[in-house]
Image 1: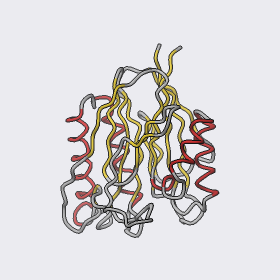
Image 2 (image 1 turned 30 degrees about the horizontal axis):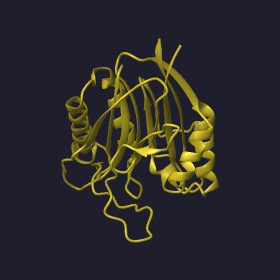
Image 3 (image 1 turned 30 degrees about the vertical axis):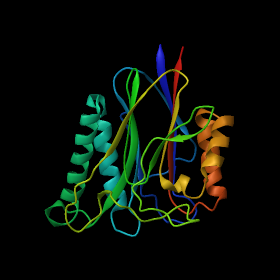
Image 4 (image 1 turned 120 degrees about the vertical axis):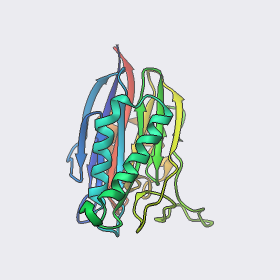
Length: 248
């Protein structure tokens, strides 16, 4: 039987006073909360399985509300997401729902918003998706490869990161449509994918992520990645999930 092992955690880091990140692994969600240790969940590979993170926009109220809304929607509809068009339409739905909840009759904080990144795991393929700068990486033993597309403006020479987003779910005073990034890649036993917010990737360079993922797997890998972000100052909320395809 082919299965998926997903090791995940979410932590506020060392600077932020609360966690505005949220996480979905199949039907399981962790919304604006904290895991002290990585949790590993195992699923048979068959029915579409969503693994996703959402990073509520800092500096604007209600980021945790927006990120929670999005991962709960993805968790509830994940089993029917079996192609790129379905994923795109679900992300458009999430965007409309964030705007619908923000301010006015929705009762949510005005201009709340979130990024999202994730993967839908199918029996023989993976649908990677994102809006914003949370990321999806393929993590084979021969080198880390970013599959998602950052929604950031071009970086200046010598600049490695930027907090500026060119699109997100919600986050503006009036409704703004989004163009989700969705990519299909083949899936086979032994494949691993890292889905994470920028609380991991901003302070920890890609070569360090690569070294850790070459050395560790599953819960230990998740712990070591989190530890690297904390050692680099933990400047933001840190949420990550590592999905591994295996047979038994």
